Image (cartoon, rainbow, N blue to C red; front, side, top):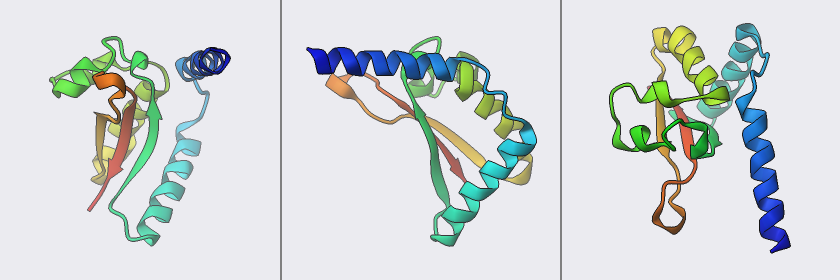
Length: 120
């Protein structure tokens, strides 16, 4: 019971942290993206999982992402929304693709959402 309560508290703290504006500039975010991409390319990869976040960071708990509905990006909040907007503005024009998908299914229910950045 204590472990479960501790895990729940940790998840609440994570959601709280991810819900607030990061304050990271586009310039700094571009440096971070370049480092991640360069490391992945040097390892022969054409995609990399950037981050996972709880489905509760989506206004519909990830339903639209799971169903690949048009406008799914409108359900994003916090950091996941910031990352989508950064990709749309800075990386998509450079040919990078992005995929948001349900990454795990605890007890048969949608769990975390993964963001994957892809290139060819």
